[in-house]
Image 1 (spheres, rainbow, N blue to C red):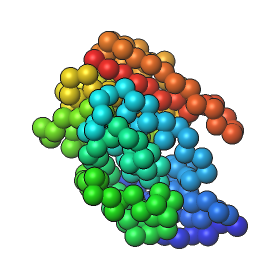
Image 2: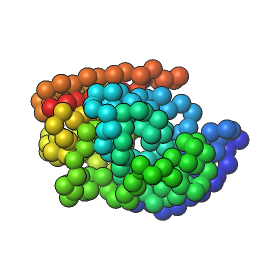
Image 3: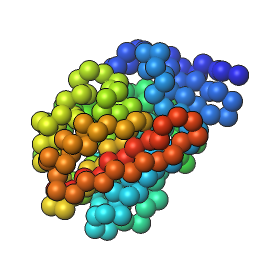
Length: 214
């Protein structure tokens, strides 16, 4: 049974939050974006990145989603301050005071978390903040962006911007629902150390997490 919980005009267009059985789904412009069914690769995105940097790491999470990455960051002993950049006010609302709050145990209420309502691409270009780990999950992948403007984040110029936002020894982690050999090549051209992790999912091709360090 599908239950429509909310439908709004968001920054990226129409956003829908619905319940399907015991799980929640977010649909953007008629395209499936995320759900609460698994979340293993979203958790891995931050936990592996945190393992690679010093304790009390300063972390940026790009894209709040259903809060799985944020919960994993809060539960990791090596993570300190966490910034979450999310451009959709409704996604923030659904996680802060709506039905998604129980999915991650009210993670937004933790004192270590700062939520920034902004477009990640623009914010990264304007900020002077530096981080030990940048964990990005704002699209379904480098080749499957939610909006056209996000594509520049995965281009050579975007990787230069991301590298500038990292502290020495910092790690960039990027989530995707599919492989992208072209993106792997661009990462290797910009960063000295690149890992590609494939995470099996119940149906379809595995999720992918890239880890890169200058």
